Image (tube, rainbow, N blue to C red; front, side):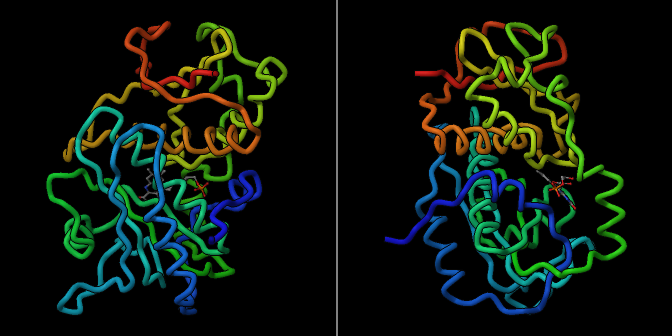
Length: 279
Ligand SMILES: Cc1cc2nc3c(=O)[nH]c(=O)nc-3n(C[C@H](O)[C@H](O)[C@H](O)COP(=O)(O)O)c2cc1C
């Protein structure tokens, strides 16, 4: 039996968006580990997420697939798709991030791409079902030691090395009272790992409120969906749920995710998504 687990904190802290890759080939056994991991991947939202792996970024007629100059040197890509449904994009965010963290634990770099890639070329190369949403892909490979100027600029503009403070993200009973690390108790660790999660343009749209020992997940309301009907921030909250869940599992904190029919709090500018219910 292959060992599929990884240390959560070390892996979460090691992950960073990598946009420049070495030409060094990835050994076949590493690719096969990734394939096995993809086959076994599940998410707690009971939604089927399709994962795709592309070993050469060329189409059948030899054309190179584009990332608009953002990614350099990568020849391996993963992608994810999901049928439009309740908590579908959240489940996709969860599953894809779990795969990204596994790949990170193998010593490889990755970079979530929701915008800067040629969606239709990757879509046909990955042979995804056209009825499904196809919001993201990621290259993977060995990172170049030195970042390119464009890459450093992108990190600077998105403030990629920074995250918002606890007081802006986590709340107690209502959105007027910030949750302290002390009041979070055992859950300070899952919440801190959640805070380090990646998000599109580093927006960090997740908000969590603790009430009666349970944790309710919200996202900042997005004014518009993309023209493809995809609200990428729902994916971001799925990523956050992944970091939270893996950390909770590692510390034996028992609970499950569910979408409550009547969420306890409605807040202007925030959309309720799901809750972590302690058992
Ligand atoms: C859903 C999602 C979509 C993203 N889309 C892009 C993208 O299109 N192009 C890009 O260069 N980076 C993209 N990123 C990377 C973010 O900019 C990056 O995660 C964020 O700035 C935090 O930096 P870090 O990943 O190094 O921690 C995306 C990240 C996420 C989670």
